Amino acid sequence: MWQLAAGVKRVQAILARPGAISQSERVEVILVLDQMLAAADELGPDGVSSNHPRITLSFGRFRETLAIARRSVSIDPPRYYLVGNLSGTCLACHASE
Ligand code: HEC
Image (tube, rainbow, N blue to C red; front, side, top):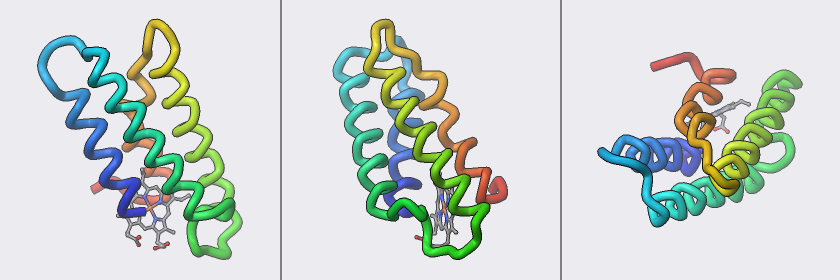
């Protein structure tokens, strides 16, 4: 979970930089997303240590959104919309700060 939180912060920091997103920044974003996917997989198919079926269900959806976000950055032209909104996907389980 902490890795997910750190990943969201990192991609947001990259996207927040002034100017267009460069090729190296794009690679950076993909790298962070890969780490987040790995972290999500490490949490397991059940996502989090929870016996709550709804938590399990929405974690699967969260992981899918993460995978789609990664794909949309790797295609041409890249789309950053989903990546920019990743923090919104956390709200499925966490109330907004
Ligand atoms: C499917 C539900 C779900 C989603 C989606 C989710 N979380 Fe969590 N999160 C939990 C649960 C449940 C816990 C507490 C249980 C645990 O620690 O495993 C938790 C704990 C945390 C913690 C506390 C540290 C820890 O490991 O206990 C942080 C930080 C956190 N989440 C951040 C995030 C961020 C950032 C996102 C989005 C990128 C996110 N979470 C998405 C369910 C979710």
